[in-house]
Image (cartoon, rainbow over all chains, first blue to last red; front, side):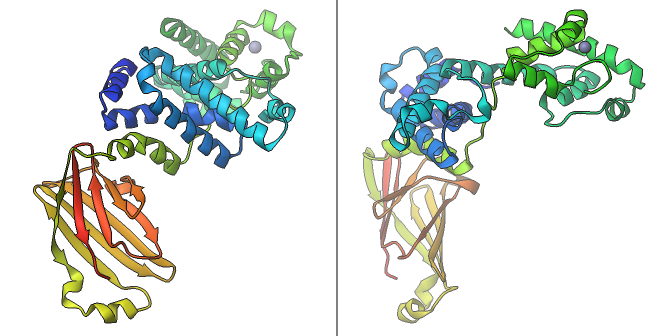
Length: 179
Length: 186
Ligand SMILES: [Zn+2]
């Protein structure tokens, strides 16, 4: 089992460089994604590195490990905005959201990323039939055809609807337990 | 999923994204789709792309922060010895004049620590690889300093770097120990 964030953070504060690496592994996607939503990949990498340096420098001021993910997300966001402001105007910075999606606070970003990881874990914990069906449903980039999916699951096409319903119910129950 | 009655996933996500839901009546009547919409909404499917993976090199740089910081002041510094040098048997001058493809292997040692070092001269400069062992096991605890550059262990638990000039001095640094690897003639 992975050590809890509190344990990792205590070790970081004791000067354990391996624990710092574990922390980076755990949250590098979050830090980078918050920046990448607004910046090019090379700017987002710079922004992420600045964020990690900032955390390292202020590590002794952060006593509550539970705050770290949101600290990272908001620091990465603020730095991303600063980088954008240097390059363009503020307005452009705020408009520079991919896919014309609505604005997203760093907290929301973190929450959704965490929920997506939870969703993935929940789907993986289901029986094989539900796992296959829901993986197609939630994580496949393309739309799956009923006929192909029924073939994959080895069930008649007309029982796909009820199977999907059964699997979604199971999934919903697990997600409620996780939350 | 696509059939004649339920909206497919892409239509649902599109609806969440734009806030325009053209199949309200269907949702009212279909628990199946309501559950699906609920989970999609909960997981942020409507807010656009959320997850990007940073490159391995970027993650490595961030991981290196603590180790590089701790390597600034090792508690003590000792000097290592060269116990093998493939250039010992070759006249150095002739080697220096060779255009490229020339290789030099060196083994450094101090107490239980060994560093295997390989330098290869390329058309574009020198490529270096080094790996440190604590006894028989590879160790990642050191930072390698060559000139003003500090390197951390990368893929394959090795230090990799490229330089126009071969290093004259190298040092291995950790929180506890600095190992001066002596000076090299090229
Ligand atoms: Zn439906």
